[in-house]
Image 1 (tube, rainbow, N blue to C red):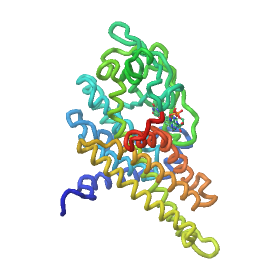
Image 2 (tube, rainbow, N blue to C red; image 1 turned 120 degrees about the horizontal axis):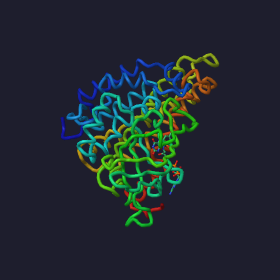
Image 3 (cartoon, rainbow, N blue to C red; image 1 turned 60 degrees about the vertical axis):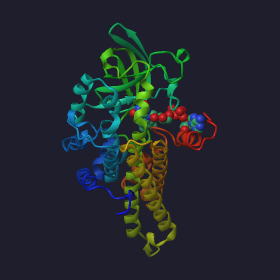
Length: 392
Ligand SMILES: Cc1cc2nc3c(=O)[nH]c(=O)nc-3n(C[C@H](O)[C@H](O)[C@H](O)COP(=O)(O)OP(=O)(O)OC[C@H]3O[C@@H](n4cnc5c(N)ncnc54)[C@H](O)[C@@H]3O)c2cc1C
C-alpha cells in the first residue's frame, strides 16, 4: 500500500457498523412511526443500545466505557439513523454518545466517577441547555444567571429547545456568572454546570414541533435552582471554552445522522421507483426520477468523504474546524435533498405517513438549523478559512 492515504474502515469499525445496524434493525418503521405519533420516548430502543454497551463507546475505560473516538461514534450514529429510526433514534442517545465531553475533559474526578458509569449503563439521562429565547446562535447573549451564594449558586433564567429535558435527570447547563457588559470579552463570564434538573425549581414544557416527536424539546423556566459548587465544570467564567471543545465532534455526529437519514430515504426511493408502475413502466425508468436519485447518491458519498476526513483529523489530534463545519453543511444538505427527492419519487404516497418518507423529510430538515445553522457554517468558513471580513 502506498503511503498514508487509506479509505477503508478497520475491522473493528466494520464490526461496529454491522453490529449497530443489526441491533437498530430490530426496531422497524412501525415502531418509529408509533413513537413519533404518540410523542413517546423510545425507551426500548434506548435500553437495547445501552444493553449492547454502545452508550459508553467514547467514555474512558476507567469509567466503564470503551474509550473509542469520534470516528466510531459517527459510524454508530449513521447506522442508527439509517435503520429508519432517523433523528428520533439518534437524538434519544446523541447526548450520551458524545455530549459528555465537557465532563470527560474538564469535570472533576468525583463528578466523573459519580456520573460516567451511569451514562454507560444507560441509567442516567442527560440534556444540554444552551439556547435561550433571547440567545440562539449568539451564545454570548444568554442571560440565565448563576449567583454565587456560599457553597452553592442560585440559578434563575429561561432556556428553550432543550431536547430530552422531559426525560432527563441531569442537565449540562450554561449560565452567566458575570453580566456580558462587565466581562472582558462577550464570551467570558459564562459558567458551565452539570447538575440535577430539580422539578421543584425547573418548570419543563414541551414545544409543539414539526418532527422528531419521540424526543421532546422543551422550554425551561428556572426559578431559584440551587446548584452546589461541586457541580461546576472547571473554572468559573470559562464555560464557553468548555463547550467549544465539544462543538466540532458534535457537528460530525450531526453530519453522520443527516447522512444516515439521507441514505435510508434514498434506499426507500430506489425500491419504490423499481416497483411502482405508471404509464406501463416502473417510474425509475424515467430519467426525471432516476437522475435526481443518482445525483443524491453522488452527493451523499462526497459528503461522507469529508466527514471521514473530519473524524480522522479529530481522532488524530489535528485541527478539524474547516472539515467538521463542511461535513455538517454538506451532509445536512445532501441528507435533506435525498429525503425531498424520495418524497417526490413516492408521489402522493410520499405525503402520507404510511411510507415514513414524510417522517424522514421532516427530520432531515432539522439539521439545516440545529445545532448550528447552515448560514453560521458559511460565516465560519468565510471569515475563518477564507479570511473574508467577519460579517456577524
Ligand atoms: C428540534 C430542535 C432541538 C434542539 N435541541 C437543543 C438542545 O438540546 N439544546 C440547546 O441548547 N439548543 C437546542 N436547539 C436550539 C438550536 O441549537 C438553535 O435553534 C439553533 O442554534 C439556531 O438558533 P435560533 O433558533 O435561536 O436561531 P437565530 O439565532 O434566531 O437565527 C435565526 C436565523 O437567522 C440566521 N442568522 C442569524 N444571524 C445570522 C448572520 N449573521 N448571518 C446569516 N444568517 C444569520 C440563522 O442562520 C437562522 O437561520 C434545538 C433546536 C431545535 C429546532
